[in-house]
Image 1 (cartoon, rainbow, N blue to C red):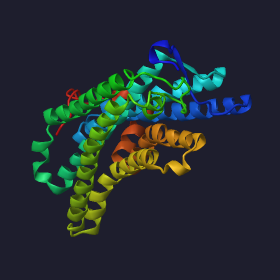
Image 2 (cartoon, rainbow, N blue to C red; image 1 turned 180 degrees about the vertical axis):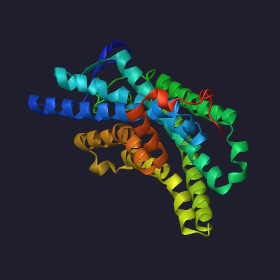
Image 3 (cartoon, rainbow, N blue to C red; image 1 turned 120 degrees about the vertical axis):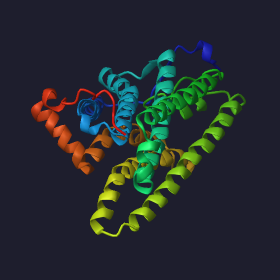
Image 4 (cartoon, rainbow, N blue to C red; image 1 turned 60 degrees about the horizontal axis):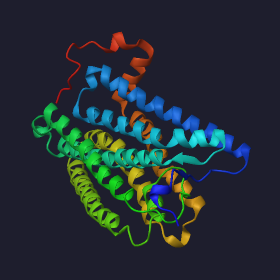
Length: 321
């Protein structure tokens, strides 16, 4: 029997035992990580420097890319280092930091996706009030609320989780310090407080999910009332990237949380964790770039002509509503 005070490190789940497969995983994840850095970095740089993209939708997209970069940078670098150096160890403080940062970026991203859904609802269902409801100050306040809510939520979870005595060793059945896996190591009589917090979180996340569903129902009804087919297509195309990102994010996360225990296994849990922690941050830039002509043109302009040609507005430090 051990407790958290006597544990100096945790042992993460290895992707493979054979050295050749470990190196293969390293190069594979390095490619995914570099692609995520490039894609999200291009979106952040393009939106920052092109004043034509200083609108609420792209402001929220910039925040989404920042959260995606933080999310994938929390898990993959350590996993790549462990595969490269053939080790499984992560320090106690490093594990706590990984739990805090990952939950923070994931929860803040979920809140931000809810706000982005509200942005699309106002743009299509209440276009005459768009400038009033989504002015520059309102957008900054909403984005700050998403980051702050994620921080407070994560602080409560991390403090609660790592204050629980650990009685079941230090082997984490995941390639990063995942909160449910840490709870599995705790004393069975001690984690009621954390599960009460998880139940409260479920109500909050369910409320965000219901809001998104109701918003998209209203959006689809408004789009179907547009008389011209071209107008319907244009209106729906502005929502499609967000809908695809939400579906990818929620689909992988819900499968990870709700999969039946009967089919659970370390290998399946590993694959599911990769799907919800690695795939969305790497795919989101591609989804938005492929479905957004304006963003594609701005990225191409940035790549081919550089910053001097893009930065043409002296007031580009603010975005227009």
